[in-house]
Image 1: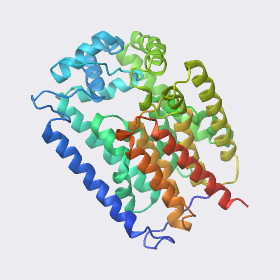
Image 2: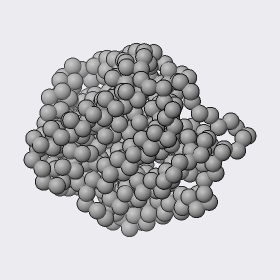
Image 3: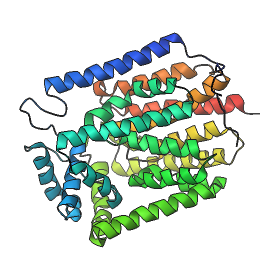
Image 4: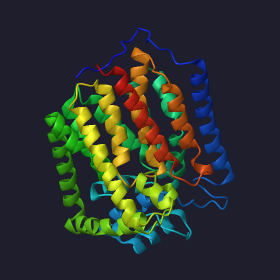
Length: 394
C-alpha cells in the first residue's frame, strides 16, 4: 500500500490559505480564553463555593477510589458509585455519571484517584491532550498539525467534561498511522483501545479482510494481556459485574435516554431525537452500520491509497457505533488529518476545505443546537472521503 509522504525540507504542493491558519490560531486562543473564563467564574472544575463541579470525569475518580479501597467491584454498583462521586466533589448533585468501562481501565482510574479530584482532572487532560496533538501532527506530517489539532472545535467539549476523547483519538490515529510500517506496534495501540470496545467494531473485520494479520494478532494479544491483568488485580467478580452492567447501561442510555438523545451523535440518536420508536431506531441504525461495515471493508480490499482507507475506517468507526457523544467527536480529527495529508501532498480537491470548515462549524454549533449535529459533521467527512475516492479512481 502506498503512503503519501511530505519529505522534511520540501514544500508541500498545496499551501493552506492564510485565512485558515489565522482562523485556527484564533480558535486556539478562544478555547484558552473560554476555559480560563469558566474557571474564574466558577463554572468549570471548581464552583464559586470552592467545591468541585460534577462532570464526566467524576466517574473515573470515583471508580479509582474504590480500587484504592480494595473494593473495585463497587464501581459497577450505581448507587454506591454515585455516593463516591458526591464525595469526590464535596456535595450532592442531580443525575449520575456512570462507570461503563471494562475493568482494565480501572488501572488508569486508580492512578488518578491517588490525587485530589481537581488535580487529577487537570492531570488527565494535560497528559492526554499532547498525545492527541502528537498523533494528528504525525499523520499530517508537518508542524501545522499541532495548530489544526488544537483548533478542532471538539477539543473544547472534551476539556470541559474531562473525558477520554484525546486518548481515544491518539490510540486510533496512532494505530492507523503505524499500520503500514510498524504493524505490531499499531496492533498494540489497537489492543489498548479496547478500553472503549465500541470503537473497535469494524477493526477485526477490516484487518482480516485486508490481511493485516500482524496488527490483528498483536491487538488480540495486548487485549488479552490487559484483560488478564485486570482479572488478576481486581478479581473475577469485577469482570462479572462489568458484564452484567452492559445491558443496564444500554437500557439507561440508549433505551431510556438518561443523557438526552440530542447528545448522541449517531444515527440512532438522531432518530430518537426526532421521536422514532426505539425498535425502528435500532433497525435503521443496524442496517446503516452493516452498510458502512461493508463499504469500508470493500475499500480496504481495493487498491485505493492508504490515506483514504485510514480516513474511511476512522469515519466508519464513528458511524457504526450507536454510542457516541460530543466529546468522542475529537476522533473526527483523525480522518481530517489524513485528508489534510493528502491535500497538502497532492492538492486539495474542489469543496474539500469548505467541507472541512462546514463539519467544524456543525460541531461548534452543538451548544446552541439541541440536535445530533456531530452526526451530520461525520456524514460531511464521509462525503469528502467518497469524493476523494472518485476523484482518484482509475
